[in-house]
Length: 199
Image 1 (cartoon, rainbow, N blue to C red):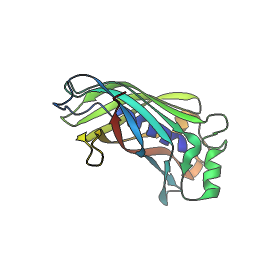
Image 2: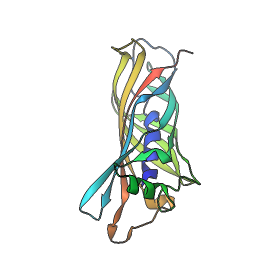
Image 3: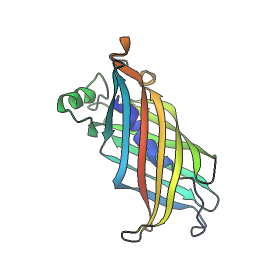
Image 4: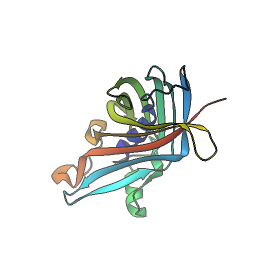
């Protein structure tokens, strides 16, 4: 299940290309603030309720042209072993071969392939996510919440929210699909702040 998330997470950073800012007149590189990023997921459990989890180790960056409202590139990496669901035994199972197989596939990767604006501060990020060594397309709906100096420290910051979903079976993760003991669809929720790279 965690894999989905990864994707998810990663995808997170791709979101960048949404909102125009009169201050920035050319493509700028942003780096995801690892202290302010959440890649969460939820998946059905025996049709009784959804299990919610997250990945705690996510990194990424993107190049965004605020004036043209164009996302030039973006990528994210999620450490699969950082999956957390609030239960040690379950987390161990999610990390093993039935799900994320972190020993053989320690990372979940996402790379942006395209971006389409659907409004002044909304858009769709298209990309490819790799989980368990399998690469599949992933679509993320994105909203740019704010671009500007951060009230704490003043660093130029872009904040965004993204959401999407994937089918874990598309990546060969088919454990407990029978009778939907563990659901196939994984919903992704991504929230992050990214800092302008002035280096």
